[in-house]
Image 1 (tube, one colour):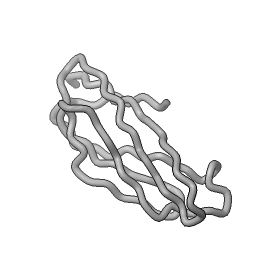
Image 2 (spheres, rainbow, N blue to C red):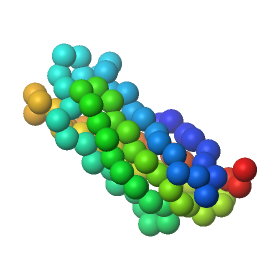
Image 3 (cartoon, rainbow, N blue to C red):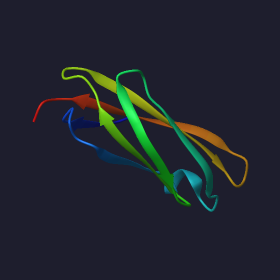
Length: 88
């Protein structure tokens, strides 16, 4: 699981590259879930990469956000990232 550090006032994007896992398959749907206290502002994706825009969070707290995808071939899988909130 990739870990990132974010200031509570920052609005940043985080990417998950699915290319190695997908092979010749492509992403047709992507959604993100996050615990209370951090905000998923938007969600984007293309054939082999997903992006989440995140804001908020409480200093000293770590949050795990999970990306769920569906592929053209009918496969579904999840990947998670951890975001640690630190005043910068």
